[in-house]
Length: 111
Image (cartoon, rainbow, N blue to C red):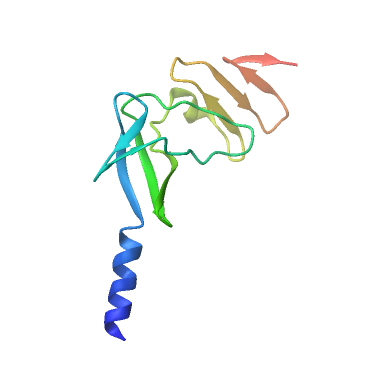
């Protein structure tokens, strides 16, 4: 009984790994190298990760999936209110969906 429990815990501990995106952006390197790892994103949102991005990878059912990135806090985040959404690019462009219905694109209100 305790052996089964121990093995189960060991498998869960190894289910997720923190790894870094590979320099050629075609794969990721952690305990091993993986190519063409799919990203999990909300429907309709697509991204190409910057090279050397810290990512969280889930290994399950014999495959790996990128669950997300470890975010650095952009300067715009300090003004973000609960329930608002901020979309940022690496180059600094941003779209903010505000609670009051405003949309800010690069800080400018769009009506």
